[in-house]
Length: 365
Image (tube, rainbow, N blue to C red; front, side, top):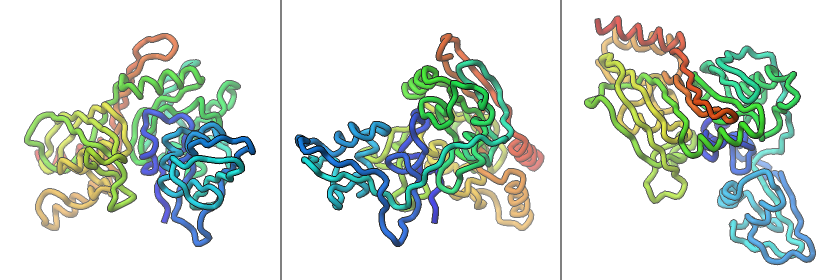
């Protein structure tokens, strides 16, 4: 079994893409543990004069391409070993200790290769570009998707820009959206642009509005969902709202309002304060309004309405029209990293969601 890259991004929220591949604790793709056990990915031998130092600090000093938080998560998962034995992040490294990063599949060395994949570029200048991603396009190479991604397409699109190296983590993606979510993304061409844009996402000054079709009617016209989001302990392929005191959960806030009531489904607008993995999908499910045709969270079942043969046929025809979760990143706003100008972009609903809405409108007429 392989775990999809969009979920493994729970260690990397879409505010801070930087030097990451949306996967397991130290930026590596994660699969189910093979029979051969763990594989060595990094090895550092402490000097003879090494004074006692926490292993997380030691690795931060020697690796330099990851965060201390990720190292600590790797230790919690048993991936950090000293002299062949797993250690916690507070272990004190001593002289001549052999510190290794062990992961559950062989090390894979690969570069991002430019591929001539069509891109819908909404805006572009010397510092950044904004693209409208179609549903079905994976954003970043990772486990099971080492080609055919948005990043491969960007590498091709910017192949003549000498400043842009698709394998350089200081440029490129600033945030991300799930494979089967459509809509707007901003990409930084320069390190300065990426640093500034990442900061804007981190302090929540960006503007992000999504349109979603969800199961069920709302009693209210608008509302707010607050709930820490983390890996679902009962299903690793899902995220979930966790208790406030659970250290693995991250604060998440979604504001929503009703746009159109369509009987057993509702078109809503969601405004994100934070950008956690699957945030809208998890928050809406927690309210009893799972996204329409969201297979990961049960939205591909008939959750509202009768059980007649004609209604079942109608719903399955709807699923065929929009064969993915009905979620679209419609509006993206941020301050230009160089000029300071406010930039706002809007993407119209794609044809599959438009057709889906029209079908529901005709049904309730």
